[in-house]
Length: 410
Image (cartoon, rainbow, N blue to C red; front, side, top):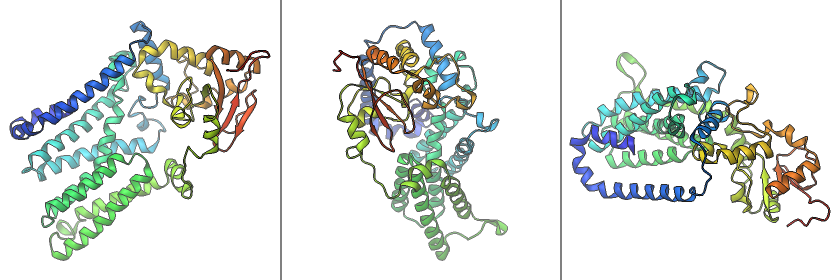
């Protein structure tokens, strides 16, 4: 909203007629957002009051040692970080250049100018906020930690290919505006919702096919010469080369291999997966490792803590004391003590507390179960806890915490 309003002031004089038409929809959307926020604040009203200094302390420890999404944004350039991080920065910078080109191409279209300004400001703000992530967390206000600066540049990265395609369409003046808009909107939607690499690859493969088709058709009509000045490579060929390189880079990523290429013959359904149905069939509180996101949704059983989403702490710092107690007792983790260097900024992954869990005696598990009313424990395959197992599969292991003799397990 802030970025959209700033862009609105930039184009205030030309946008006035459009504002009059859409102001009602904007106000409605704003009220819906305020209502959702109010509901969340009401739900949080019973959280225990925690001193602001204590909240800040826990938050700083989490950001400095644990949080994956709030690690220094440009650290990968000076360390052996993932190449995808460095590429993301390059794509964001490239998108800003493309937006400047598009702004010149779309001068007659007021609404297009406004949208371009919004995307440009978003990428620029994300790049600038990235600098703040290299400061110590106690050097900036707590609310800034909620923004996750790295997520801002994600929008520009997702929109880069549609922006390139849009710029290419504008070069082919003989294409109808409606056709250009439909194609652009289709790929825009694909890119926004393409969270995983495999979906992105399908979208970009389709873009290249359209690119080749458009290039051949328009060159045949004489709309655009095949090369640039003095025989240099043409704009459309440069875009094609960029897209091919993008696909080649991501084709061998671990995420693509694990989520798509290695599972082409399986369709996963939690309602028919024996591992999850066996958990769902039992009652009581679960203690789950960080490897099972949305376990409550998949099994309809309560969990002591959703460790796959531990970064909720940055949005609900009032829960710091309770969450810290759960971490200490159930997971053997102290937020103030950094993990091994190779596990910094990877969230609270299960490798950190595996030895703690496997070293617990049956009596210690029983005491923990009584303290938190735990009934079952879920781990990855290969873990060996001093508990009786109920179900084992390639997905994980379900253990139960047996009650003491003479104590009935509710």
